[in-house]
Image (cartoon, rainbow, N blue to C red; front, side, top):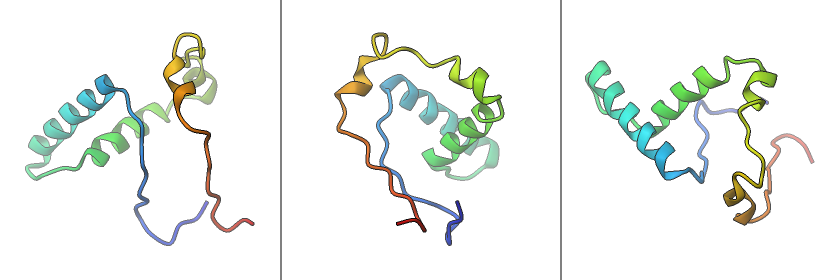
Length: 85
């Protein structure tokens, strides 16, 4: 999918422990880069690391809905597809 911009804005639902970990990573990344860093930089770094795995290995980490029922409590998903009707 091609985007005319380098960045895309998303609204996310995150587990509190994941948010804490990403915040810590962003702060550490900021110290490493010697500048303020956004949480999105830590999220991108985490996604780059995680998405370097093969899909089957990554999907093997998924828990069942019985183990993670919090995702069922959210509203239905509406995914926008750019460039398609």
